Image (cartoon, rainbow, N blue to C red; front, top):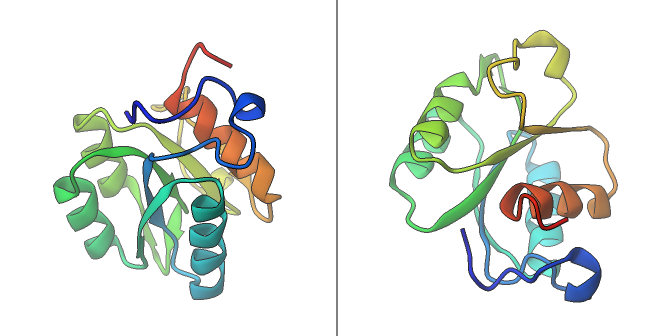
Amino acid sequence: MSEAVTSSPAAAGAEPLRGARILVVEDEWITAYDLMATLTQAGAIAVGPAVTVAKAKQLAANEAGLAAALLDCRLGRDDVLPVIHILAARQIPFVFHTGHASQLDLSEWPDAAIVAKPALPDLLVQALYKTIQPGRC
């Protein structure tokens, strides 16, 4: 988790995720780049985007200093369960940003926020902030 992330979204002003490295896993290019821009505007360091499960697994396993991940549940015909297992093993929290949450059994991760597509940027930033800073919001 990034020490640079401030204590509350409101106190952080325009950069509530300052310095947090966030992995973006999203297969729709336009959505992926919108997410990357949203994270950058919130002060985060956006990693990715990973548009395939193979790329997402590689980044989840090898990228140093990840504070969290923002995951679409489906990349093409594949689900992101292998990526989730890697993140969980590394104790990297994640937020689901998806229109497919009902198609997967996510009960194994009851603490993971689910933000339905489409979502306002502020909702995504707040969900990530709460994920990175549990108990401080």
